[in-house]
Image (cartoon, rainbow, N blue to C red; front, side, top):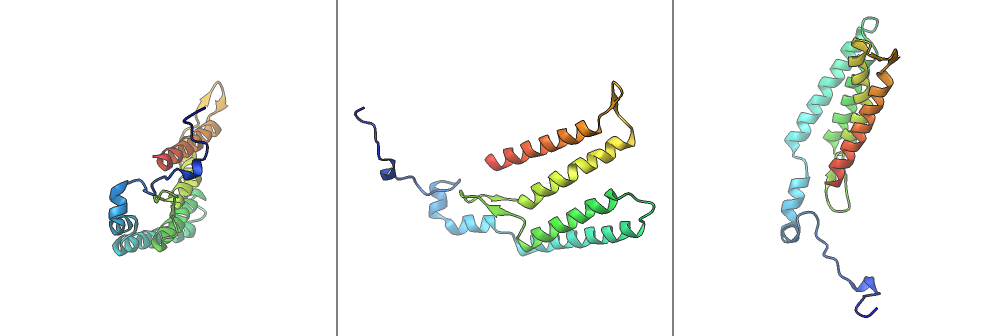
Length: 152
């Protein structure tokens, strides 16, 4: 076929990220927008400390509280600790930052919280407990939400 280019290596693709030509002209502004300020890191460290105190308090009440009351703030302690050190995100090839620690936190805490809510009143359909279905739906919803936020 005449006119069809067979050698695609000769095609130049602009190396612009999600902001186009503005990004190429202002790389320092883009970098400032992707970095986390010291105040934000300090607040995240404060939240990590508060969650750690909550873990210790709930663990001291062990016979009266369930494992979920210790597990959920423990996960948040780890999450905010990672975020305050800058290890909670990763940069995609196009330059966008993805809060991967936050997504992992959603996956491992949302089903537990839903399990607690469903456990308040046993929900049954035709005599079958809906707990497993609710947890599976939570995981599917969370995974699709993460996929949607990464692809935008």
